[in-house]
Image 1: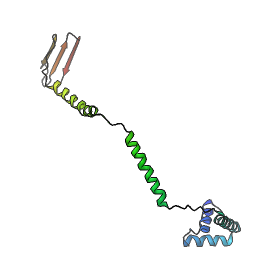
Image 2 (image 1 turned 120 degrees about the vertical axis):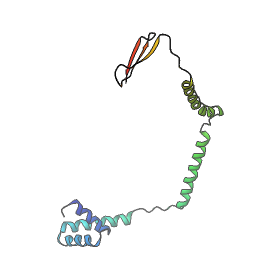
Image 3 (image 1 turned 90 degrees about the horizontal axis):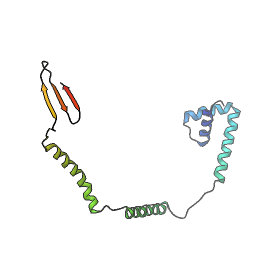
Length: 150
């Protein structure tokens, strides 16, 4: 007996879980290995002790009885949860739709309004280089000059 894998094979042999080819190989090794035979005998004794001394607990009710109780408790918990959930008032439900609509309306108004130039601002376009356009924006109020070359 050499490896952990073979020990697991011996346990599977005792439990009757090996296929025919692997079972034949284990029986061949058992015929020549005394240590493996001792382990198999010990495993069989332990299996017999477990079978004879394992307590058997029987419940008077069926599985369906317990499952129906579980389903009933789940339904009760869901009903309590639904009652405790705060209901949104009519005003809150209107606000849920009104806020995005007001945002869209504000954007539409900003786009639609004409844009006037502030006093002290100038916008000029200069064609100084062939195929190039430069624009200059100057704001005296903000103290800013921007040159855009395209």
